[in-house]
Image (cartoon, rainbow, N blue to C red; front, side, top):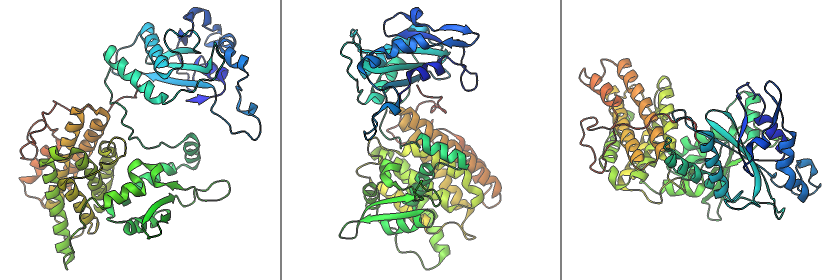
Length: 493
């Protein structure tokens, strides 16, 4: 995080906290190794005089004439990032309590890798690490070198900090986390979050991401996609001279800026795989659904049966294309949540939302190519989206698809865990848990519609993690399954 006012940050770190959560704030490491010298004096219980520490920390910036207040930037100039660099490092709840010396070493590694204060470089930036809780420390640095008084501009510092955290996990035997894979979508910024909180609603970026992802899963082409979106949000499309979709943007109705204009979000800013280019690749990845039968009952039956067969085939062929199958499974879950009765949607929507993290492909959000098994999953999702459920829908058919998808999601959780993609594995396992809960509820609600033998077997099969056979099928040979998939992770470091 970048900012301007070092003294304000230091005062917060040594203050009581917003909810009086800060306990025993103290310096655990500092640029010159003199922690006791720079420890602020306690003037009253829980109150510290941070003036000397703040002045020493910002001395190089003051000598260089670097603005330490955004208002000090000359009018007409682009406002640069502030010179204050702030990073919070946190251990997981299940980790042991690290000592002050261990935290100091972790901080030194972070500052070395980012280039803010390289090891053995006495002219590096000034910095301080403050600890006011057992499980985390805060690092504050002023990005001006002590020797040349030149500004320091860390490049890709987020990734360098991530590398240092991964090294610390191994060195101190902490809970392992997944390496960064550049798949996380952009989170709402502070302004978006505060605006949504004032209005008592979900941030527009998150709402639009969810609606666009659902529309993309249900549509088999650009026109259907835009039409589906237009029913829920404002849409504008950009086309090539030939009429193909080149880009699009969406806005929440009623969400406007100070000029009363809609606040637009381009698809690529919502998620890497929601850009027009990625969606075009997705639509071209699978054949369109076959021509529908003349009778709706036949169409529904065929759609549910083909979706179940596609999920079972994808599970059996997972070794051929796990990334493509994972991404297509995310689409099928979204469609399944959309087509079921409203009373059934919450757990399926939860499963789809949780699995979204496990469906992402590193870098571009989705694979470049998909296997036949992945393509069949996507075609089945499109087909299912056109029929929804109805009076003629067999409870046994719905239950069969739920079981097939739950088994597939469990296999994908194990695959992600084997690749040490622990956050994605945990997301897939949470989706499996949501599906398992829904299977049990569905079987109870439709008792008598499925056979007596199907119901207990369905509930037990959905609850199991992939430790052996699932739903009576032979497990894929590529998986040597772990004894369990990691549960919900704690806060990251």
